[in-house]
Length: 123
View (cartoon, rainbow, N blue to C red):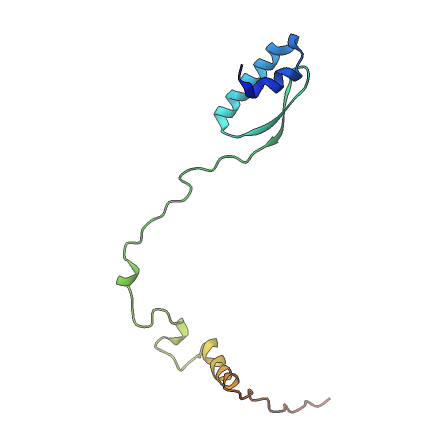
């Protein structure tokens, strides 16, 4: 007898061992077919109940890496890491980086940004 099955046979009445063997064989065939592990509960009559079920096994080929056709150092271009706003029409719409950069320079140099008082709107 398999030593790991001894607690099951100790719990079941000896008269019902054939029923327990039949249920264990059914569970073993299910386990081989699905590949899922489970936590079993066995009563004294040899009935098996699945109390907890593990996740289904993941497919081995779930992710396939496709190598790029052109390596990254072969497709470098001037300004490849710049935002699209900083392309040929640079003066039309400045990016957020260019709008906040002068404020950052003023604060980093010790000068506060321009905080002139705003005129109040009429009530």
